Amino acid sequence: MKLCAIVPSHDHHRVIGDVVARLRAAGLPVFVIDDGSGEPARQVIAALHDEARETWVTRLEPNRGKGAAVIHGFRQALQAGFTHALQVDADGQHDLDALPGMIDACRQHPEAVICGRPLYDRSIPLGRRIGHWITDFWVWIETLSFRIVASMCGFRIYPLAAVQRVIEREPVGQRMDFDTSILVRLFWRGAPPLLLPVKVIYPEGNSSNFKLVADNWRITRMHTRLVLAMMGRLPSILAHRPPRLTGPATHWSGLRERGALWGLRFTAAVCRLLGRRVCQAVLVPVVAYFYGIGAGREQRTGSRAFLARALGRPSGFRDGYRHFFSFATGALDIFAAWAGILPADTLEAADPEALRKMMQDPRGALMVVSHLGNADLARALLDDATRRRLTLLVHTRHAANYNRLLQEFRPEAGLNTFQVTEIGPDTAIELKDRVERGEWIVIAGDRTPVRVQGHVTGVPFMGAEAPFPEGPWILGSLLECPIYLMFCLRQGRRYRLIMEPFAERVILPRAERKAALRGYVARYAGRLEHHARAEPFQWFNFFDFWAR
Image 1 (spheres, helix red, strand yellow):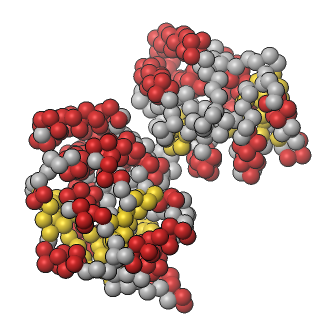
Image 2 (cartoon, rainbow, N blue to C red; image 1 turned 60 degrees about the vertical axis):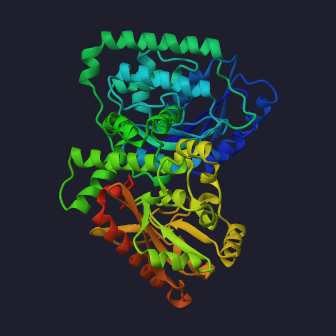
Image 3 (spheres, rainbow, N blue to C red; image 1 turned 90 degrees about the vertical axis):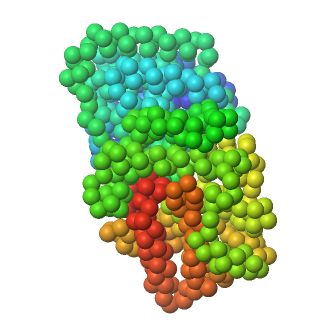
């Protein structure tokens, strides 16, 4: 495999130098296509030309459109002997941290189109999001498949042999209709798509080349042509259906949130107006949809793999549906608790006397929770004074809509939280101060680090070695405070709060640090397995938990 990068640009020059530098750092030769940019972009882009560093700049005059620029780059790459080409935007929208995973997937499946599946933040304009939904709908019709989503995302690795056949024989869009049209036509010819999550932002002050009227008209005509072509070529398209591919395991933080904000708001409104039981009935078909086609393959596969280990037998459709429904009702209960719909006695302590003593203890503590059960419901049902003692270390960016809805109804749901992606020395010092003031720090012990690779320890869990984070125990040693394990498990209509003393202090001797860490991690994994086997359908890690 010989891989290069193609960067089309029209008047985008603010960060193109950084984009090219990142691509070169990854070892990729770069073809920059200046699609008729004006000043000062023209000079900035021209200055990137450096044949010694395998960076070539070509200028098209006049402006021909994004599709024409990328196709020009394809032809240059083919002429230079490259077998694959990465397409990436010049304006910094695409998170290039996803590039190693895309390259690995390309090596495993050189015949596939490796497509970035966007994980948008709040910066995406509403009109653009709606446009993407509409295009997804038509692409599903044109391909007779749900396998392509976000077809307008221009962050991909193409197999150039397949691309050459398409651009020489098919009418491919030359402007903003390019990304969707070439992907659909490659699918028709048997090139399988493989979608990997990538964070996509709309940078502040960024200018868009999308022309609202002209480009929407082009996209409308493109879908019309594709639907008509699909109907005329149906036997050939069905004969060349591409195989389904499985990509590398996705890190949990990269899994895409399922469910639009309006759908969550509708469910919340039903719960508030008609009660929790009626809302649970509404969830029955909703969960059936998500378990059937709305959820990603990785979530379903992760569910089946865990249940097979926990139940000691292969899991079937009913098991998977029950697992997803348990997750949905748990999320509903969190909302109902924050909204004041659930009574306080919904939560009961497994050992009331031990819990009372802990709450009266003026010392701070570290609480290690998990995604087994419903720890956040316990926080919602605590009294205000106890809740103020809590500081949560969280990663909520892969569930932005749900957390946004919670905070709309109860702003307290977002108080005293630190994003785990932003913890540095200053934060550690502040956490130490909070513990000394008698506060409790809450951290999950069953999610590997978001950014720090390698800070995990593999220990036996459910019959196989699984990676667990070292962070909670390193933090515990720094905070020099008691450690508790907390589980909040549903039993019937109530939840049982279990507080287990784990260690008076975490001690990590310098000479035996790895061994000591492994001991703490293994003890935690053992307690987690004990409770998970007792309540397997309350396990809410929907990914390959055993993947390194």
